[in-house]
Image (cartoon, rainbow, N blue to C red; front, side):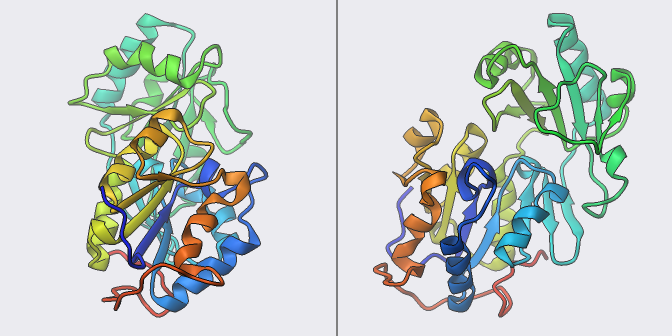
Length: 299
């Protein structure tokens, strides 16, 4: 990776622990900067482990409606049209094998399945299904409790494994040997005992490549921001990968540079060289593929 000295054509931010502060707010400075990006022809978008429906509180703060990456890259979603553009799913057979193996290893593990429809809001209770012993990492009522055999009966964009007794890193180390990487990809984006499993080859990087190609933007003109292991692939792919000051140690080691923490407005601090009140970064002629509002559109 080599950071671009010129203004990027595409800026991508993780959400939790990166763009948002601990109160889940986007700073006024960052909101102004996104407006400046739009004015200058740079596309700003999000790449998150969240499902699409959980991104609207963020999108409402930044006042743009781009094509976003959801579910760690398993879903590409056009937030302006409320349309799922692309989805990669785990088959019921693979889910059944994984859950069966992990339950044999530890019967106390909880499981959840994130499914996808055509819209972010299709059948909310059916899009997120959990086993009875699943301990929710975040407060939510939009779920259905079902037996594990029924949980794995339909394709899912993400299978969640929950164990509040240990950290996510420890849980990952315990279950990774039971997951064939040819069949599924495991990662984590939160420290509190949650591992997220997707189809093989699925990551934020794979989805961002799709978005960038749809815009005619090369990796060298992309800047990405992240803080957790589920951001590693996209940090390695982009021309410039920026870790937050609060990032996981592995993420800091993999990034090109480290900015301030999310509570110190680290994303805005780094982007200020191009989009701040007194920009210092180089400029370039933009071969824009986005509309005049700076919104990325899927093909």
